[in-house]
Length: 286
Image (cartoon, rainbow, N blue to C red; front, side, top):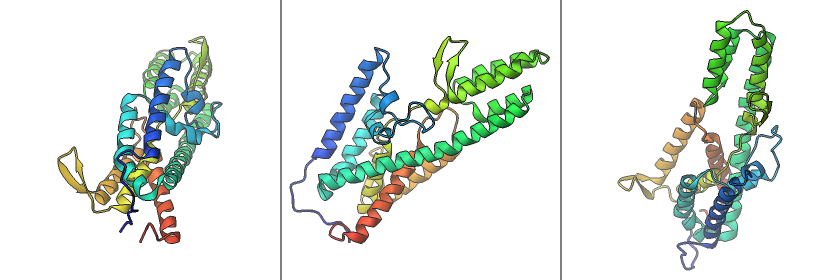
């Protein structure tokens, strides 16, 4: 059972309100700056630690950026829907501490997963360089090249297959794979390009999933209406959501740019923090 404080319930409490305002303003600023060739995500978005864009403060600042209005709207609606009640119960200070710990924890989980993924790609690339044949190139493309780049690599593979005696493809193939992974100067495009390790992760989803978990933790039997029609208890909704995220993260489908393990990381840190508070402060959890 959760203890409600004897205070007036606020539909839009201070922390939730200001988080929504800041996120909306930064989306607007990002859109304006992009027209001048400035990507705010290069400075504030979360980057892999081996990217030249990486800065420590991005563990926190990425929570305030969003890719588009739909992304912002879905996250801020969830923040208002679930976070408002929690902030009213805990107070603004405790809610903000919880929100940012979940967000930073989600970022750390995401970076850990990226470390394994990029480590596997770079290991496969090192092995390819020991035996750079067209067959090995095709296998590398199948396993590790995703999204819009795959078609270009496939076309290059077909070109190599049509002229297997041309040894130029050996050095070129390594060059293009390295460019895909680490970025650098593209002789074809005549300019600097980013590699996959330079991709930015933005959004408050990790922190939001922490808030969602807290809601289910505090009110496990409260019914939520899925698509406003189907009632489901909060504890089952969150458990189902976590399973879906885990499955999607493991499957890692081509073109899926959602940080599923960041979502799970937000839930994990929420659980750890809630258990710690429950053990050490029974005025709010008993």
